[in-house]
Amino acid sequence: MTRRHLPPLTSLRAFEAAARHLNFERAGDELAVTASAVGQQVRSLEAWLRRPLFSRLPSKGVALTAVGERYAATVSLLLDQLNEATARALRPNAPNILTVSTLPSFALSWLIPRLGSLKERHPDLEVRVSISTSLTDFEGEDVDVAIRSGRGVYPGLRSDLLMEENFFPVCSTTLLGDPERPLNEPADLRHHTLLHENPEGILDYVTWPRWLAAVGLPDIDATRGPRFSHMFLALQAAASGQGIALATNVLIGDYLDAGRLVRPFPHQVRGPHQYYLVCPEISAERPAIAAFRAWICGEAAAHRAVVTP
Image (cartoon, rainbow, N blue to C red; front, side, top):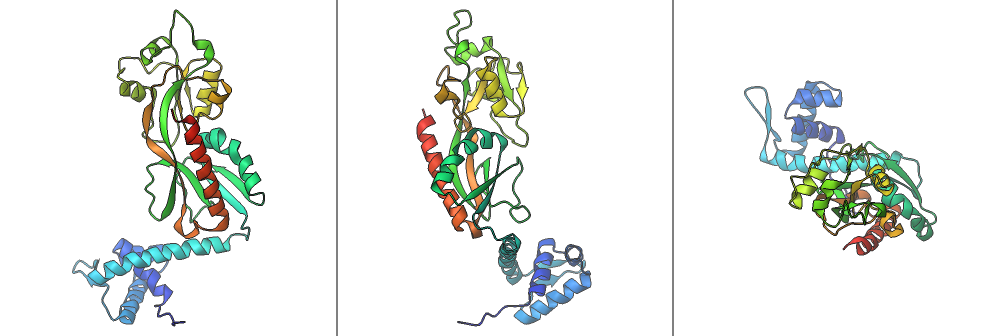
């Protein structure tokens, strides 16, 4: 085996911090050392490489050389990977325990009802579900995989598309068949109570005003009606006959299959986001994570086949 030719880690950390900040003093603050110590480590690395990494500017600032720019990009990535590997090595040795972070509505309406099939397929795999609406810090949090609604661009993470999201009205069957307030087409919504969801931490969401505008009905007053913090609350209100809710093909759960809710008409609007399973590239093929990824992707495919009109 070829002997590795590696520079001192201390010098690499000092150089990477200085390259990010383009300032030795701020790099020193991050590393809890003096700016002089950072400069000394950088000079040591430059001597080891026999190449300048920074150009010293007259204003006492620094700029990366062409070699320094290329080296900093690679070193930063490698230090991130080393940090991730170290964090995971320090965790308790429990290869069959998997922590999944996901959104509240997705956990309640989609994930939890399906975990029984995962247990049947992988009886030794213990899944722990964590609820969060914020982005997951895989380095700082004890989370293995996350399920998020977004556009799928997550640098440094493996991203598996689970489902695309479409929004459509749903209601109780008790609201259908009323000759005085028909519900045969979107224009009929003006005669009914609209149930609103105000999800926390989710931007660019399809709300009633946006949905109505998309189907050509911006004149309907979409400000009226009660509001709920989660979709499953709005769906429950709709199931009890309190009004019309906006549902998504992802989170409708068993409401349609059980007949608790119905779609009064087929109109739907495509959402700006999709649901993804994400995890660090470095751990994507770990047996427990690979098993969960294969299972949830299969479940998502089966769900798409059932709810896609």
